[in-house]
Length: 108
Image 1 (cartoon, rainbow, N blue to C red):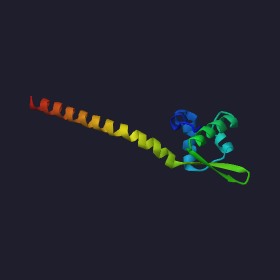
Image 2 (image 1 turned 90 degrees about the vertical axis):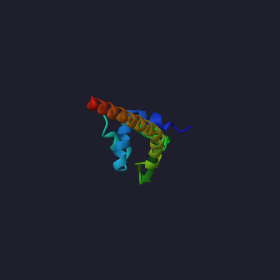
Image 3 (image 1 turned 120 degrees about the vertical axis):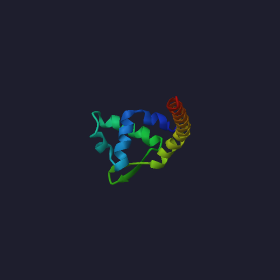
Image 4 (image 1 turned 180 degrees about the vertical axis):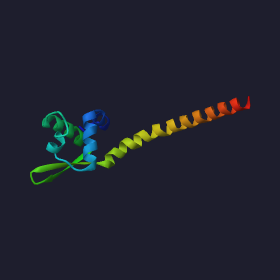
């Protein structure tokens, strides 16, 4: 069963792993050096991210390098877009109310 992408990014350690891997591919050992936890714990986080396809892997010799999958992150962006439009509309309405209040204040 594929992991839920939203559960995957809910964890701060997994978000930190994504930030690290977004700039360059890394091995589990290289990633573990950035955290005060065991390599096994980092590997479990990597597995969750890989299960939901936020990470892909590439084997080079005996090392496995994990890469960020930006196309999968686009799914989150598309989902969030509906809320962005809603809040932009709300802020535009608020701007108009404030402009009207300010205009009425200046007239009095």
